Amino acid sequence: MAFTNPAQFIQQTRAEVAKVVWPTRREVVLTTVMVFIMATLTSIFFSLVDLAIRSGLNGVFGLF
Image 1: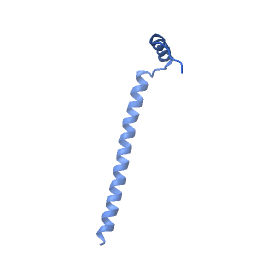
Image 2 (image 1 turned 90 degrees about the horizontal axis):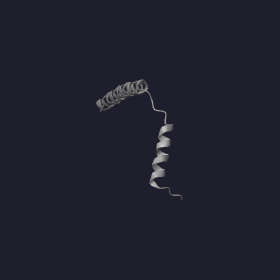
Image 3 (image 1 turned 180 degrees about the vertical axis):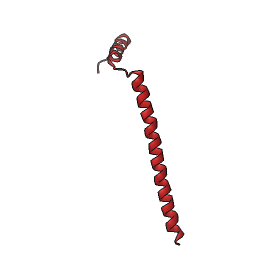
Image 4 (image 1 turned 90 degrees about the vertical axis):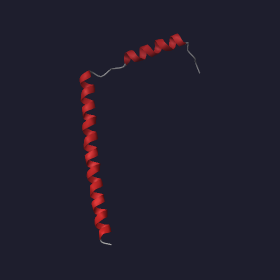
């Protein structure tokens, strides 16, 4: 395994960070909004599934 000195490590790290394509502010805001929308839709879906299962079980247990 080849070891580099700390100065080389920092230089290589800065070179790699310079290659990163950072998202624009608009892209960050758009993806954040989309995450919140998807989280809301998912929570609504699972709430409805929970309600349906609970109603079904109450109906089945109500027969006994």
